[in-house]
Image 1 (cartoon, rainbow, N blue to C red):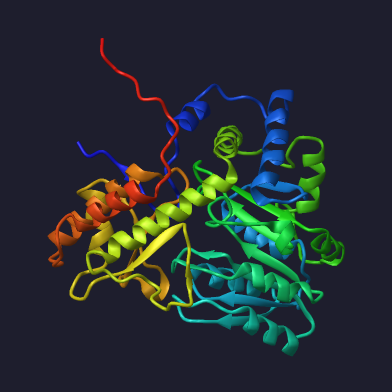
Image 2: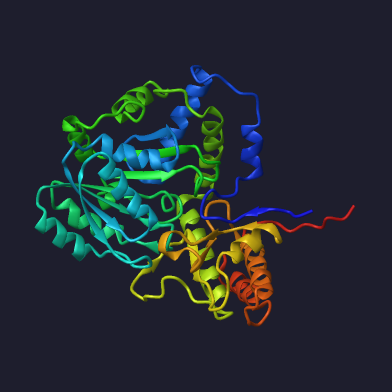
Length: 395
């Protein structure tokens, strides 16, 4: 028997309580009972996004919300600036080109980011820009973009600022209204701790004005129609009912923990992973000091002489821990340790010990057990002590 642990940067592990909730008999989606769930979810999502605006829930993967952020706010030939330094920044550019937009792609190497000053320069050179599209947490590289300062730059123009926060929202600090983000996107299978199939999108009044003149075709992903239905506590189309139910439970778990505490937990877990992998001589990706790492995933360079494709395969198939390999130009060059959503202290140790076993088997030379020890020491010294009563468990 191999006990399995899902430690990828998405999809992520689902708590047993949520699985149990989703296993209950199915309800119909045009009922008062389901309307209550829709309404509760919408209000709780506002607290996660930190916004007064509606947060719409689409039955799709996150890419559906990315596409809707273009089709609902742009017209053919409109100019957009896309910040592209990884697989998912590239996806925004690809969607824009698919809808015949004029895409100005600010490209940087995988493992780099794009600074607010570069965005400001591009906007001055392209004053007719309608929107700036970017990642917050670039999952393929482990880099976090400086969304707060980029938002300040874009906010001085008529362009809308759109972020893919699919692996960031609910895991990293995010203030949609305070920072001036016009459109924000998230996905269910990341920090929200439920299976794939729901995407979330919220848009500002500034973006709503753009929507009035947008001419690109849309039908299923018509956000105006979705918003009207949300006001009636329902959905435009048949939703993924079971996922809505699971989301309701997950959001209550997150808000009970407190969003500030959720963010702090992700930051602590990420810091612990970074210290642990470096303790056995592994190098983080990216290595550039001025690039901020995301707290959703730790990207690690494959050691010289090791087959990068075999690390995730061995961890999954022999030791029961699923992580992720590299994508795009980093395929085989990095591996990615996920620590997003339903992740805490014990998960760190499970993931690291499987990594060490795989690396040892592949011939990497290091002090066996040191990354686990480093993590345990970090946990003892830096993790908050839970307020629980310890009692005698005798008969």
